Each structure stands twice: as structure tokens, then as C-alpha cells.
Amino acid sequence: MTTDKTKLRTTDTMRAAVIRRFGGPEALKVELIPIPQPKLGEVLVRIRAASINPLDYKIRSGQLQLLTGKNFPRILGCDFAGEVVDTNSTETEFGVGTRVFGMLNGFKGGGYAEYASVPVEWLAHTPTVLTDQEAAAIPVAARTAWKALRNLLHKVQPQSVLINGASGGVGTFAVQLARIIGVHVTAVSSRDAFNLVEQLGAERLLDYKETDFIKSSDRYNLIFDVAGNRNFCKCAPILNPKGLYITTAPSFQGVLAFVFAQPFTGKKALILDLRPDGTDLTNIARMVTENNLRPIVGKIFPLSEVAAAHTYGETKHPRGKIILQI
Ligand SMILES: NC(=O)c1ccc[n+]([C@@H]2O[C@H](COP(=O)([O-])OP(=O)(O)OC[C@H]3O[C@@H](n4cnc5c(N)ncnc54)[C@H](OP(=O)(O)O)[C@@H]3O)[C@@H](O)[C@H]2O)c1
Image 1 (cartoon, rainbow, N blue to C red):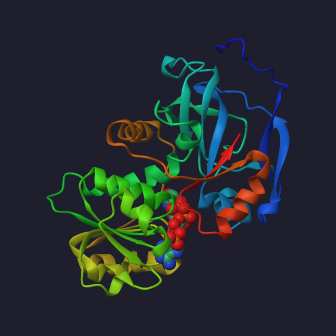
Image 2 (image 1 turned 90 degrees about the vertical axis):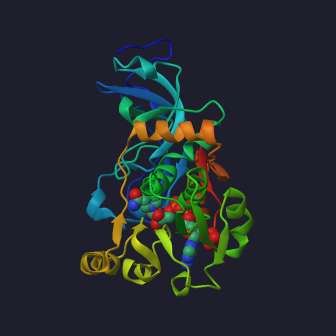
Image 3 (image 1 turned 90 degrees about the horizontal axis):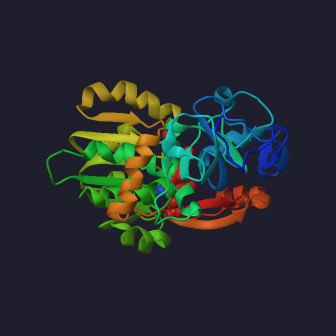
């Protein structure tokens, strides 16, 4: 293992937000636990900021326990940014002192902590124009948006996308990425968020409280259902021939609709899922530098107020990402 003067003893502990049972935000406690030791091919990252995703609420509440199991204590969080402080990898690109950001395995977590041990292939360099708080806002939300929007690359222009849920973590990246690749955007959000999504590049704005977009006469090449409250069957009539419906959060009925309706419509449906991938993040980091892609940072909480941060995220309509300063 290559180390420097920052090397940590195996007995050292760190602060981390853990759950020891499923429950509400009060289940989150900040505790002292051992610092992980990097395995072969991993580096130890001193995390300076983590961001909160809706997935974290679902894991904390036990909604996903069939996928996560009941392993406690469990550190939540998969988005982080910080600095490499120790390495057990021959990869010199991410040596001690390198500013990095990345995404951990969503179901295993580990991001709401002072340190995480991370395989080098899950990391990317933090763009110099970003703070750690901004970089931590990127991984899950931007990668999800990019996975959806890149389906429109290399297609004949003009292309049009409807983004349902345009003002949240994923939606704010999706609107910007659509602008970057030259796609016309119709954004569905609350009226309060119109200014934000317009500034990010949306051309048409629909308030979901006033307009039901599936009743519109407009047609789209892609419907990106970030809010996950419209299924493929409902959206298929307003997709262009060979149009694509993509959702982040399918319901059981939504999946049935995919299976039974897709073969008869000539239109396609996709459910997004994400695995850690540093190469994907490096591409997104390039768009930060070259295309002015920017994370929208909402409210910042210290790690000690992680329960309040979850309460805020679940009960308010937060704009942009909620960040934990660590
Ligand atoms: N499958 C995957 O890999 C994956 C990855 C990332 C996210 N997700 C899922 O995607 C969903 C969104 O994630 P996020 O990070 O963007 O969440 P978020 O930051 O909480 O944003 C959700 C947005 O949905 C909007 N919204 C609420 N009710 C709506 C409605 N009836 N119609 C249209 N929009 C509505 C809200 O807009 P207003 O504030 O303007 O009301 C809010 O901005 C979550 O369920 C998350 O778990 C899945």
C-alpha cells in the first residue's frame, strides 16, 4: 500500500451517519466507526461533501429491503466528493492529494461518512471550476439524466424531449444536457420552478398542477418521466413513431404496461438503472468544463444535521440537490 504522512492507523475511527434499523429520518445517527481500509485496487477518499438522493430515503425507510437486505449498521449515501488520502492501487492517476468525486454502489452506500474506500474505476477528477459541494451534487443525478438523453445523440434533427419532473436533481441536469446536445425541451414542473428550468434551457414550460401533458396535441421523440408518475401506455400516444419513453421510477403497473404494450406500438420503453462508472463521470466532468453544465445546489446541511436534511428533502419541494458538508 502506498501511503504518505496522512496514513491512518487501522484503529482510527471516523464520523458517519448510520442506520441500525429502518425508519424515519430519526433512524439516522452520527456515530464513530472504524475507517475502512482500501482493498487492492482501491483508494481511501477523505469525503468533504455528499449529496442526498431519493434512493437514500427509500433505503432508510426499508422500502427497498428486498434489495438491500437488513445489514446494520448501514452507512447511507452514494454521491461524494473529496480528496484521495491513501492508496492501494497501482493506478497513478488517482494518487494521494487528488481531488475526486464519484458514486458508490447505490444499495450498499457509504457516502455519508468522513472516509470511503473506493475502487479507482468508480472515480473521476473533480473539475477545477467546481467546489466539492457542487461536485457531490453530480454523480447519480447527472448520470441518470445523461443515460436518458444520450439516446437522442446522432439522431436526425430536430429532436424534442419532454421532461416530467424537470426541476429536481435529475431534471435540472436533463434540461441542461438537452440544451447541450441541441434538443428542444418541454419541461413539466411546478410553476414556482419555471424561472429555474427556463434559465437552464427549457423552451416550453408546463405546470403539472394545471396541465396534464399526456392530453397535449404535441409529439415528442423522447419522454423522460423523471417523476415516474406516467406510464408507457399513457405516454405512447404523444410519442413520435419510434419514440422512446424512459422512466427512473416505474410502478408495478408501469412495468406491466411495458411488457404488454411495447410490441404493439412500434415505440420503445426503458427503465434506467445505474452502476458506479468513473468513465461516465469523466465525460460529464468534461461537459462541466466545456459546456458549462452546472449542478444546482439547494440547501447545505452539516453531517450532524443529516436527519433534518432528510426531513427537508422528503417534506419540502427542494430546488436542486441537498448537500451534506462533511
Ligand atoms: N433508476 C435510477 O437509476 C434512478 C436514478 C436517479 C433517480 N431515480 C428516481 O427518480 C426520481 C426523481 O429523482 P430526483 O433526484 O430528480 O428527485 P427530486 O430532486 O426530489 O425531484 C423530483 C421532482 O419531481 C417534481 N414533481 C413532483 N411532483 C410532480 C408531478 N406530479 N409531476 C411532475 N413533476 C413532479 C418536483 O418538482 P417541483 O418541485 O417543481 O414540484 C421535483 O423537482 C426519484 O424517484 C428517484 O428515486 C432513479
